Length: 111
Length: 117
Image (spheres, rainbow over the protein chains, first blue to last red):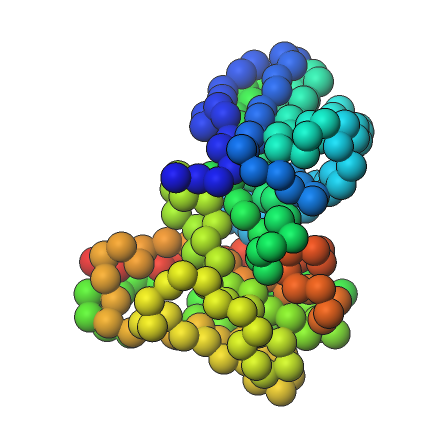
């Protein structure tokens, strides 16, 4: 059982559409990170959210950390083919030395 | 500054063999972590090395081992390979030695794709 559940597992949409992917848990995290991994590459950190209710924007990407710090979402506006990749969330629990990782959402943006 | 490099990029082995993977961290980074990535499972933490010492270990059998050299380069070894060991093996380096991989920014290499036949 994954401690961090990501949904959907797979999403294929047309260029220009909006989308939201989710990262949910029953556990509380002190911080949560989002990564994007492109084929043949390792994950690259996009953002870290720390405060419950926090919203961070990175161009067309909006990240939100839930008030209770148990969940997070990533919203992409006007998706572009360059957004294609595997989006991973990873949470930091103070009781754990290493990050807890979700299984990822595979996103394909069709031109 | 050069990124994290991993060699080889692809490897095909048969059951029962052993394999050694190599990781060179970003210059100046002293912490190296190893992960196994399989479809649907996300990243599973293998171990972390800092200053040539294993600082933490995940829940993998003893067939998985690693080491770190004085120049911070790291190797991981898998002995008696099983079909289930087929995966992408990623290493990540980080600069802050005191906080560990959960709080410090990690920089990942491209991974080694291991296929066990």
